[in-house]
Length: 398
Ligand SMILES: Cc1ncc(COP(=O)(O)O)c(C=O)c1O
Image (tube, rainbow, N blue to C red; front, top):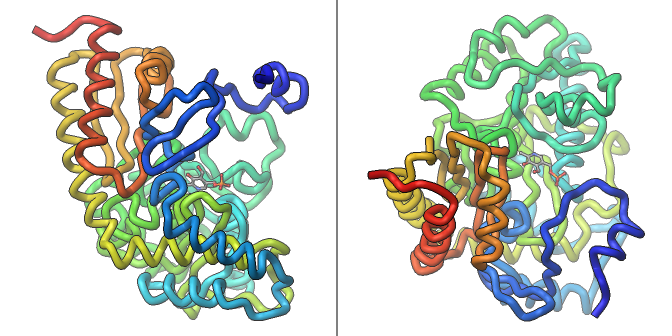
């Protein structure tokens, strides 16, 4: 067997601190390493494997497509792309779609679209108000959009045209709005920045402000979309509709894809103004269509809401048992557990050794984003491992 960490050290740029496991296989909510050890996967490729690993409908769709047509130029019509676009429009409040390959690419396109809208309708306004603690991707412009110094400082000077303001503070958005503002962009629930939930009425106030000023509301649903929070899109739970929405992550259950969606009035790109070589390729769109069709037909978002509540209740019970758990928060199957001290790294390692993959969200917090199809049995198993790990880490209440 090769020494994979040594190869990684030799050949890879040093951008990620990996866990000491080499995964070779996945099925449903489980993955296996090269030694055959099994893990329950509550990271799911960063909330990507919506239907779990290698779901039969995705495998079948990809296999059939790979045997027929993998990639064409976008000069031609391809059927999987059109079917996925139609399904997305039918099940959302948006009218038009553009496909790319990743979340950051989708957000870049959304900003370009908002700037085009600003040129057409707002006297050339180009600035976008985004939130502190947001995360919109790793490209240069998205680093400026993401209001987190740790992502921004290494790459200054930042791309112009973004103002970062406090999340859950409508006054901050109002103060930052000028005649140059063309849009407000936010995640309905902040994922990477801490699984931060919107205060009651915050999103409706943002929507009302955008309406009042005639500027666009862009929702980044890359992490929250496609069922993750218990409805197909998170905006459905907050009584608002975006003008532009971005998707990626779970849309094709693991095959790279991204999408910009827009209301008709905001879909102002003209031919040649935006594009992507691989964007919307038949392979990714076949996987996306199979995934979304399955999610819609089997009411998977409803399962997410139910299992998410069950999981949250179980985590809250652990919170009663372990005094160092300070908060459990989330929506659907996007959940964080916060500790009152910086133990997340060791908890992640102990969970790994116990057969459970979880994400260290912050030094003092974990994030859970398992496959949307998990059942109560798998949740019980994960809670059992966590209970054992937390019992060993530190003192119990009472
Ligand atoms: C809300 C949100 N937007 C954008 C991105 C960037 O997506 P990608 O890594 O596919 O570029 C992420 C990734 O974590 C995300 O959570």
